[in-house]
Amino acid sequence: MHHAGMDHDMPGHMPGHTMPGHDMPGMGGHKCNMNMLFTWDTTDLCIVFHGWHISSTLSLIASLLAIVALTAGYESVRELSRRYEAGYALKLENTPRKYPSRGEVERSGRIVKAAFYAVQVFYSFFIMLLFMTYNGWVMLAVAVGAFVGYLAFGNSSATKSVACH
Image 1 (tube, rainbow, N blue to C red):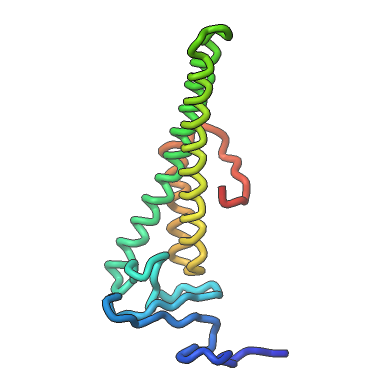
Image 2: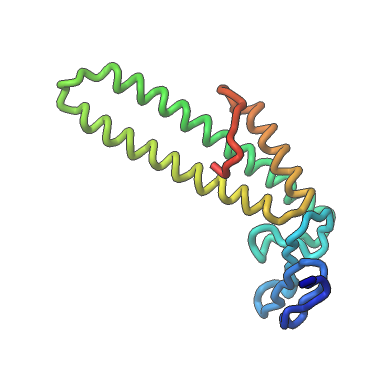
């Protein structure tokens, strides 16, 4: 069955695979459109949060620069994690096996590595949400941020899996 043009009983739903926003009191009085198809349109674009609303060319440019910085920051966190792991491995290697504090070094190192991992997972899923605006400008900003971040912080292989983290 072809569903194009059907509103599926959603008041205010406009054809074209966009989801209407909510004009709620105290929420800035604007609507957020959520596109389900790739677009370059920034009309009523909200990025991740209702309050991150694109209302002008200046707010679009500022948002794109913020996305570049956020994505570059992810590469920074990845590099910090790699450096910590290298330092931790060296510290563990230099701690005698029968030394009483070796177990404490192992436990604290594992906790710090887990914290780095959790931050990376959270960060990567946030970047995925940015990408899922399906807006070409936002997607480009994510890619530029990855490029800038790798130039600034990437000291290892450029190979990256397609997964979110």
